Length: 145
Figure 1 (cartoon, rainbow, N blue to C red):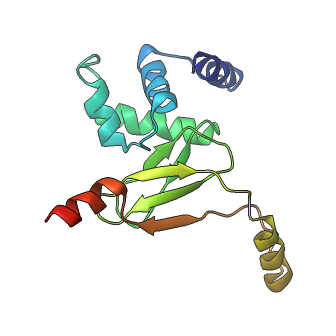
Figure 2: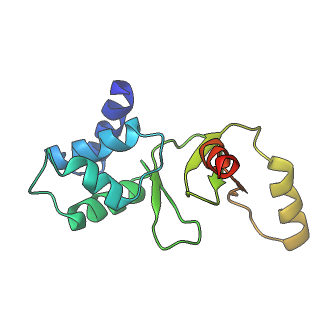
């Protein structure tokens, strides 16, 4: 993770963004998180160590990171965006019960992009796929009820 943080810091510096302790904390939290946190979850996690940090600071920095290409914003129908610092090609499985999001690897569906381009005339720039179901924790709770 340290290499990821250093790489992100260099990218921000090249974009003329000054690294503050709060920005470093938010970025480190995202790079170390597998849970695709919301801005509020990041705030709750970091506020004990950074009591002067506001939710607005979190949102502003997340927007900055998204614009710099360091973080992806994920929107899935509910009103809260989630943030993912893993920029590799991967897909997400989403629990319909608790909302947890889990990464999974699968070869990129490039043929789907080519087919979409052929049939629509679009210049396809990418795609997103989500798999919906019930996670093992929620499935276990349903069986015990």
